[in-house]
Image (cartoon, rainbow, N blue to C red; front, side):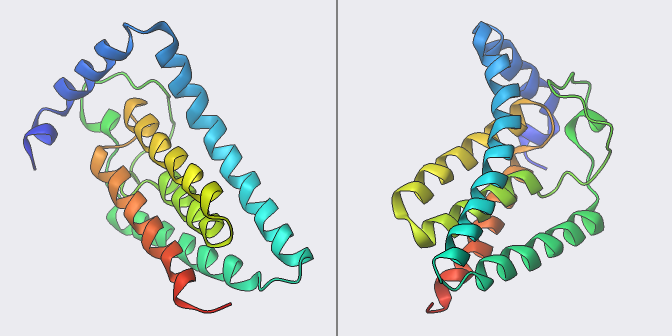
Length: 170
């Protein structure tokens, strides 16, 4: 483990100390975590409907994310790594009843994968959603739900899985 992982509680508590100096920051992180996740689900459904009703080849946009999500879920169960609040003496911003399944972040993976799906259809909107996906990753770390490596692996796996859509002409 790196230095940050050996002293994760110090890293997290420093981050919280900094964030708490800005009264809106904590509320923003909690709200963004919830809202970005819901927004991405809605965007994905709208994308599928748009492709379906405009006679576009929508099936790969259902197949690749669906298979990738299932493989991600299996990977998380196999790895079953603890969440930061399970290992360290930290008080997470968002309380979860679950244990384990921290690596990789499925929220960030899904948001990134959806962003790439949109990017395949609309460049500017897809790029904006990728920025939101990265911000969601920060929110998941700041909330004490994931380690930075969980978020980075989720982000890059989302990029890779979504990138498969660019390998096929349709």
